Image (cartoon, rainbow, N blue to C red; front, side):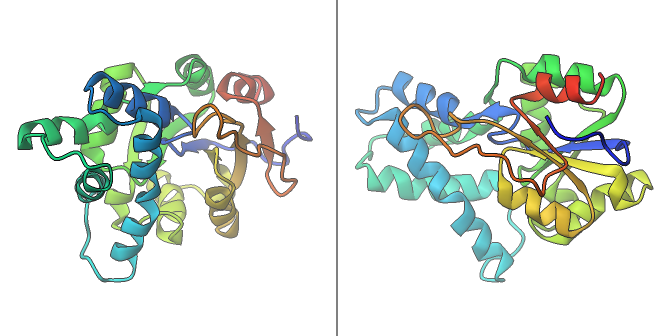
Length: 236
């Protein structure tokens, strides 16, 4: 637990993939259930590995603005080829691609968000597109006050337009916004824009056997085991 806050944030903005939902476990389970003859674990890791390179193609101007749903489909085609899966119909591939709308929350997520919402405005700040984030929230009961996405700002994190866009949306200075995330690079981008930051430990984000280093970084405002722990630290 960190020292008392100099300024209590009004807005908590949450990274979603890995922080709020278990993308690896969810994707791996669906792939295994489809009986594709491949490791669900390895397939999930390969699909996610294509995420940042695909976004970089947009940020570099190689591709025009592209929704994450569409980038996921581009990556999926590559991963299916990589694993030698050639028998899926277009409908089956479309259904599999939407697994990202159906990701399961971590066990502490809904309780933690509900408690945090009691004293703060809470919103998503994800590179996922609005359709994805809205359907995900509806499916698993995420109690957002507002859904914000890279799509709103036409920029992917860590572009400053995303972090500063949250402050602008709610009419508060950046220091009144706290980014909550399980990724130190995301938090560093937010800090550079003047936001407060809270790191959430998700040691199994990449599955069993791929444990993350979840050591504390003193540059962050808070460090929490999970969202329930964060709620306790913030007095919720």
